[in-house]
Length: 305
Image (cartoon, rainbow, N blue to C red; front, side, top):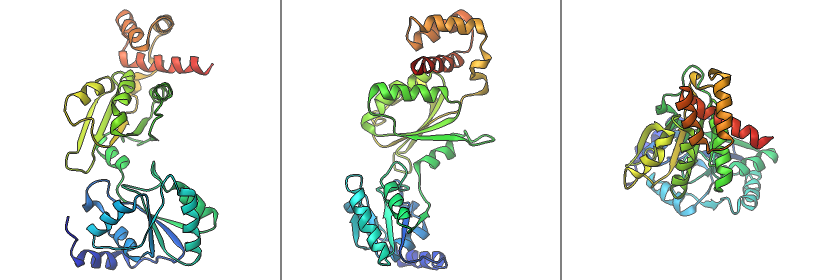
């Protein structure tokens, strides 16, 4: 991408420059998650205004700034040096500098470095100002159609890389009636898909490479997720954001009679969840998805006892 015309930065100065940007302040700046056109005018103005930009990866950020015709001193601040670099930022803020922080993509401090920096800055009695912008979380929510009348959701982010712990976390998600947003990297997406399949027919919306050239958004049943990944040669590549949809009102344990729940308990004592649910649905005629949620909740209760 060639550098934008000077009129873009001029527009940023004109529209965003009316607000006061105090010295000695940390500016948490959201940057595009893929499409460079998703930068905000206020973000451009602040990135041009600040004395230093702290960032997760200096090479990545230098290339990003160059795309907008900007050049600024950079300070590396990432998960391996966040504690020490945060002290450098605090000292520079005390000296009256304006400092921006950007992660590699999206809104910093949300499953990205930056949260510890903000904690240190605010603990030192200094100010941190958010500049909102691109976020894979809200981007996926906007097209998932799950907002309904309340729009409640839980942001869980990355699940554990350890299989046993991740399966426990998936069980907890299955027992929670609220929508849940997850993030995952390409090298772990197949393992996560296999675990999420235990949620049965509960819908999930998959966002892959959001805002980028080969972006995909699909709504599928959780138990179809592994097959969906295998259906295309590129589907296991790229960054993923997933929304586990809220449980439908009919998918509640309260809608299953006591005799069916007793049958389910007997089957769960001897069989894996999927097999127990399948047999219980055939015996009782109860909705399979409701039985899945009941089985997951009962397994979790047993583990906690």
